Amino acid sequence: MRTLLVMRHAKSDQHVAGVADHDRPLNARGLATAPRMGAWMAEHGLTPDVILSSTAARARHTAERVAAACGFAGDVVAERGLYDTSPDAYLETVRRLAGDAGTVLLVGHNPTVEALVERLTGSAVAMPTAALAQVDLDLGAWADLRPSSRGRLAGPWRPRDLFAAGPA
Image 1 (cartoon, helix red, strand yellow):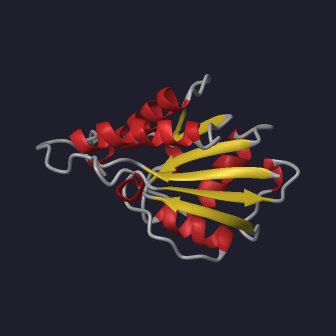
Image 2 (tube, helix red, strand yellow):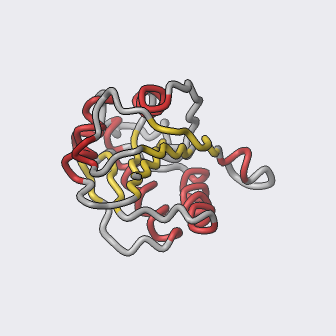
């Protein structure tokens, strides 16, 4: 059994003049929400063994804040192949970089994260910023992960549902 945690990056600042899309930072809401999601993950036994992130600033910063808050002890692996790409590229990145991890957190972008979850589970889910979905897969190894692999969906968990009184 392998667990793939799929997360959309936290809320970014879309109004920074002269900053390329790849370099957009998190806004104040994103900076607050990412660690809250990481703490929630730790409380629910979802601390990953490996974290893979898009190289986009908003995804990397989300992954780093989630990692610190959930007690992740390793390094976040930033991968260019997770930016502006397809679900197939996400699957290939997991196959290539997950090693023997039991649980992998992948931090990426819409619409790809939604398409990935739907492909692996058959369920269409909305993944607003900082949302998290858990896909449990009957795989002996990540190398066995294919576009045709099917898993069981848990979640998605959305900040606005988890933290009604705080930033979402």
